[in-house]
Structures are given as C-alpha cells and as structure tokens.
Image 1 (cartoon, rainbow, N blue to C red):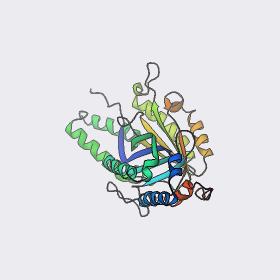
Image 2: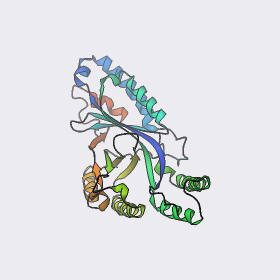
Image 3: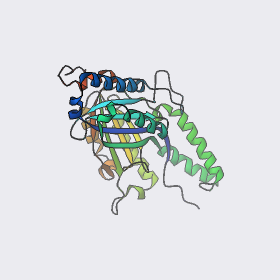
Image 4: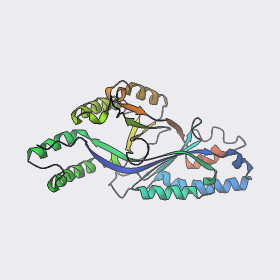
Length: 293
C-alpha cells in the first residue's frame, strides 16, 4: 500500500510584505518647511487610499471588508522607526507598491532595515486527516490524476468557506506585533519527522490557547517557506500591547512551541495613519502626541 502523504493540505491567500525602515532625521531636518510639506503630502496622498483598500480579485468579501490594504506603524526600538505592511492579491502587486512608495520624495528618507515576504496560509490538518484515508480507501494512488482532482474539490470548498480568513482586512487596532518563526528540524528534535496525526494534535492544542484571546487579539499567520528566511510569519493586532506578552508566554508552554518552536526577532509598532504623518514628522514639537491618539 502506498503511504499517506506526510504533509497537510494548505490554503494560500493574500500576499503579504512587511517593510521596516530607519528614518533619516538629519536629512529631514535639512529640508526647508515647504519641501517637507511637499514630501509629506505626496506620500500621504499615495498611502491614504491604500489604507482604505480595494476589494480583492481572488475572493468575495463581505460588505465593508477591504483586504487589499496597506498600513503604517511607528516602530519602537533600535530595529527601525517606521514599519509598513501590505496585503495584496499577488506578489506582483507587492512589487508595484514597494516601487511606488520608494520613488516618492519621502521614500528617499526611508533606509531599509528589514523586510519579510510571505503568503497568508491556513493549514488543513483536520481536513487532510479525513480526506487522505478516504481517498486511499477508494483505491486511489496518491498524486494520480483522480487524486489531484478530488483534492482540488476539497480545497476549493475550503477556500470559499474561509475566504475572509485567507484575504483578511487589516484590523483597526492600535498596536502590531510581528515575528517570524520555524519548527525545529534538528537531529534530536524534528517537527517534520512526526506523524501528521501527532502534528495535528499538537497544533489543535496550540490553537486552543489562541482561541481564549480571540476577543482581544487578531492573529494572521502567513507561510514563507521558499519566500523568506523563516518558515512562517505571525502578525498579532491588539489595542493592549500587554496582551502580546501574555499570549506568547502562555503559548510557549504547549508542546508545539516548547519542543518545536523557534522564534526570530520581534517587531512592535503603534498605528500611524497617513493623515497623522505630518504630526509624527514635525521637528518643532508641534506634533507631540497629535498622531498617537
């Protein structure tokens, strides 16, 4: 008998790009006030429609949900000053928005510090655990033409049911915490040598902790295997930054994280609207507190 595929089915949604920048304050101060105003007006005029977003081509969205969006955050700490996140239908659209923002006058003051490319991902462990044995019980050879057709049917149904999660709107919260992560694959502890049943159980336990925070934290998971240096990216959105610490701390006690989780650098930002960019950039103190309402 052929073996059941070891990997779960996954659904892909929005393409996602994080950009972290250092702002060139010395060069900004050397500009006269009219040049600064012109640069702010151009950049804010480009960013403002992106904050509102456009309906995606890839999924039918409920009224009021505008997934193809961008958002700007005032970043904290030495890792940078500003962070942009972009959700788009395709990687090509990410390349375009990256270029469009970079060629503005304001873009010349943004010094890239880090970036991260990924695709919103939903793992279908439960569906895979049911579908694979069912198809093999019908005598289908894995990855045969008929197998692939039936798998596509399952994925199409799941994609329609989960369209809002696959093409999410950027939450209207004040704070963002982003970090990349891997699953260990060393000689002694290797996530990828565990059976799909074991991995499904661990991920279910892991998810139960996240559900307890559903009312206070919005989480978006994106896959980056083959796209960037880590395997997944995690975005957490909340109105209370202390919730980030509590959630991540509690999750580290479950088996999936305690034994198999590896975490990259953490990036935290405060939402900065395009309309408030001038206040954040004020060099005479007139914008103090005006952008952080």
